[in-house]
Each structure stands twice: as C-alpha cells, then as structure tokens.
Image (cartoon, rainbow, N blue to C red; front, top):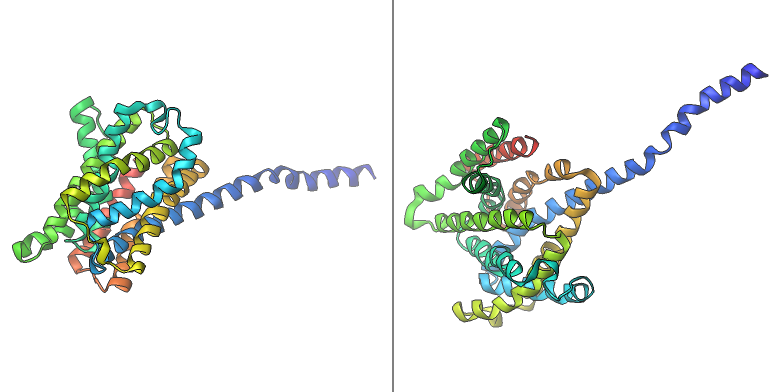
Amino acid sequence: MTILRARWRKATRPMAETRPAAPASRDALMGLACGAGAALIWGIQAVVSRRSVGDGLGPVDVTLLRFLTAAAVLIPFGLMRLKPFPVGRLGWKRSLVLTLFAGAPFSTVLVGGSTFAPALHTAVIAPSLIPVVTALIAYAAYRETSPPARILGLVLIVTGIALVAGQGLIAGASDGAWRGDLLFVLASTMWAIFGILAKRWQADALDITITLSILSLAVLPLLALAVPLKIASAGMGAIALQAIYQGLLVGIASVFLYATANQRLGAARASLFLPLVPAITAVASAILLGEWPSASELIGMAVVMTGMTIAIRA
C-alpha cells in the first residue's frame, strides 16, 4: 500500500506543476490575437486612405472625420483621467508639441501621400522609415549608437524603400507617386520625433492618445481654412467608412490592441507584428483596389520586412 501511494504521488506531481501554466498560455494567445488584430487594422488603413481619393475626399476631410470621431469617444475618458483636462501631467506646452508631430498635421501629411502614391507605398515607406529616422536623430542629438545587427536591419530597410520608390522616381513628372513618397518620408520624420519626445517625457500611451485626439480639434479649423473641404459632395457611405475605420479602428482600437499585445507578450515580441503590415497591405490593395505590385515593389517589400525584423530583434 505504501509503495502504491508513493507511485500515485509521483505520477500526479507533474500534473500539479503544470497547472499554473494555463493562465500564461491564455495570456500568450490573447497577446498574439491582439498583435495580429493591430497589424490587420494598420495593414488595411493604407487601403482605406487610398479609397478616400476615389470617393472624392481629400486629406483634410479624412483627418477631420478621424479626429472628430475619436474625440467624441475619448472625451468622457479624458474628463475622468486627465487633470488638468485635456493635457494631464504632460502640461500644455509638451502636449501641443506632441500634437503637432502626431496629431492632425501628421494625419494630413500621411493621408496626403495616399492621394499620389499606391497603398503599398504607404505601408512600406511610412512605418519602416520611422526606426531609421529615429536612429539618425538619436545619434545626432544624443550620440546614441545602434548595435551592428540593428544597423544592418536599417540599411536593408533603406535599400528596400529605394526599390519600392524607385519606380516612381524613374517615371518622373508623369507619375505623381514620388510626391506621395516624399510625404511619407515627412510623416515618418514627424512620427520619429514624436516617439523620441514621448519617450523622453514619459508620456502615458492611453493619456497621450486621448490628448492628441482632443487637441487636434483645435487644429482642424486651421486645416479647413488652408485646404478647401470636399466632404459636402461625398456620399454617406464614404464618410462613414473613413469615420469608423480611421476614427474608431485606427485611432482607438489599434492602440488598445497593440498596448495589450505589448503587455501580454512584451515589447520585443509585440513589435514582431509590425513587419506583417506591408504584406497585409499588398494583399488588400490588390484585392480591394486592383493595385497589383510590380516585381521591384515586391522585392523591395520583402527586403524592408526582413530589415524590420532584424532591426526589431537586435
């Protein structure tokens, strides 16, 4: 009997030891699902922005719909979280600076690029160039150096972007894609500056999302005065698409999903979903817009995705 009891305890001990792993497994699955969801939203964003051109909406119209929708949802949360409202502990000066680089002006530049360049260019150039510009600014301002593996990844990113954008440059003035590519470079620079400042000032991700959406409301009238609005002549379906996708999914849902993935998986693993964005855009733009990538664009996209993966893991 004693021997049987000993064997029973020995046989059941591993089962008891593996039970605590279940919650960790659920956390990992939740993190994977949230990371994939964020990448899916960002991948299709370029297609939705490009669709706005065919629907008769301009960059300012899309920016207006995005921030009006996001602000309407986030203002109640801002009233509860941010003291003083709507800037919180960051204060007015820093909040306004961050809004300049990542709020309505940034959205206008990014969507403006989509009016000239294919959706694939948006997904390849804009997000992938951010770590390159960030590394350059960090070195120029703070003499921060990157490890060799990251430098290799950044070089691959620049090489891939050259392959993607090269077709527009060769086409010259007859093709406006190069104008959109330049706007994507500007958007990447703006976001890189925002990222550096937000990290330096220790801005809370949720708080700054709320603040940017609310403070951008003050910028919208200035943009509307500078660029004539086309929203009055657009259909309700086109308006609803941009308001829901840009305002709710991109402006709120993607931020929440990526933050959750970052919490469940860690920053390094969560960032591995970013290289998926160009691939999702390539498939979505071909199916939904009929914009089939050329051979050089496909090769460039693959090089960029490889470079992003190497740079992230370095």
